[in-house]
Image (tube, rainbow, N blue to C red; front, side, top):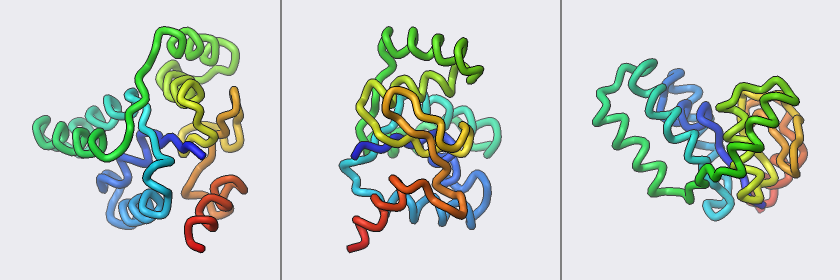
Length: 151
């Protein structure tokens, strides 16, 4: 099962919200099978922005962090079709265009889950279900994937 990571998961892993969230994000990522993880290219751009603006990292250091993520996992490009689908998502469901781009690219890549705190829990579009990986009760698909990995 393919799983896309949203910007907030990566930002937490980079300690933008403290060490507790960093540890939770890193534990989550380490529990997922590496071959299942994909990163929509939009999330890398957003991560750079968050690291420079919010975390006050120097651009070169932020770039190094983003490049490490890019090197660690496959990156899903934003195609013209994904952009059109994102505009439809934004229009039809009231999502921001940037969240819509992430979701549309995840769907195009064949992801089953998009791990995000920013979108509505359980929202499903074209086979991709959005779930908050930090919620007290995990989405059954994510819980099953994490349990499967443990065993």
